[in-house]
Each structure stands twice: as C-alpha cells, then as structure tokens.
Image 1: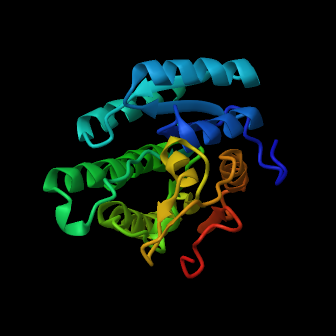
Image 2: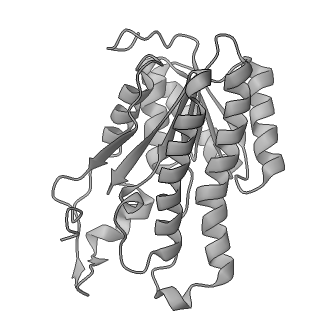
Image 3: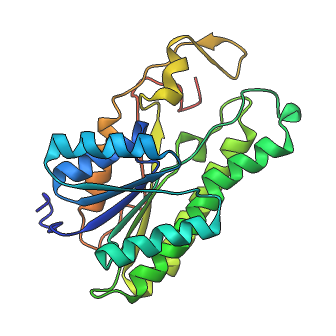
Length: 258
C-alpha cells in the first residue's frame, strides 16, 4: 500500500534499461514498495545479476527479459512474454536510452544518429504501443506509463543534437499517449532527470562542456532520488496523473544553463 492508499500488491511493472544506472535505481525503489518488477535491456548477464541483487535486497522476486528496443519483433516478444507470464501490465517505465558522441553537429554520422533515435525514441514508442494494447484490453482496464525525458527534453547541452532531439520528441510522445489513453484509463507522465549519478554521468566530475566553451564539473544526485519520484508517480490512483516532473541536482547548470 502506497502513501496515497493505492494498493500495488500483485501489480506488474516493466522497467526498460532496468539493469543499470537510473533504471536499476527505479527498479530497486519499485521492488521495495511491493511492485512485481520485470527489468529488460540488451545484456542478459547484466539483467540476471541485477535481478538477483534486487531480489536479495527486497525479498520480492524480480524477473528479467532481454530485448532489443529498436526491433519491433523483439519488443513484441517482450510484451507477449509479460502477458503470458503475468496476465497484465500495470506500469511501464520507458527508461532505456543512449547518448551520442560529444562532437560538433556536422561530425555526427548518420549511423550514430539512427542508433540514438532507435534506442531513445523508436524503442519508447514501440514499448508504449505494446503497453497500450495490453492495458486497453485487460481487466481492470488501464495502467500507467512513465517516460524518462531528461533535462535535455527542455534544454540542450552543447554537441548533443541526436540525444536532445529524441528527448524533445519524448515530450511529444508523452503528451500524445496521455491524450490517447484518456478513454482507456491509461495515464502517461514524464520525469525529466538532471545529473543522477550513473555511468553516463561519471564524466561530470572531470568537467562538462558549457555553452560558453568552459569545462566545468557539475554536481550529481543519488539515482535513488529518481526512484523515489517514480514510486510517487506510480503510486497514484489512475484518476490522477503527474504529467511532468523534474528531479535534478539543486545547483547544476539548468535554469539558464549556467
């Protein structure tokens, strides 16, 4: 039972990119709250190790399924396994994604652009599409989708065109899914994360390129803070929705990017 009174007993949550970083932190928080968590990503060994670790911490079983999010057949197989194993899906957290090489825009290859779009945007769309198909037809009807938008869904960093483009697009996907899900009791919201500590943010301690050309170390926050925010969003009854929320290091460059 969450603080809002929403009973999550037996509720099924799927977290993409759930084996590492922010996704693992989100999975940890959901599992500790009593959700039945399924983590998914590309690397089976990473998923298996993360599932065992999370189970040891919470005592709640954590399942895993490997998936290539840019491949429609792989995503379809993932959701078919979710439905056949659990019979329903109550929460999808679209977290999986990759960054791009921090080089000038004109030096980004088409192959890298395509890879970032596939992982960050196409994957989120395909997972949202499959989640809708389950949530519309299950009994009781409905569910919740939470997208990882990132601070870059609002404000870019230098040399980040592929990543920033996909994250701006995630905001459009969030709003469209929130609108299209209304009549089917499907709520969709977005969490924009700023500098949560992970492998992707490790370079921030050495210095990150700023718009004025300087390199500056940036503060980070424990990724557990993101997990706590997702637990709050996911713990609301379906007649309430957090459409957007920003969780960030208090003193990081964002408001004005400086």
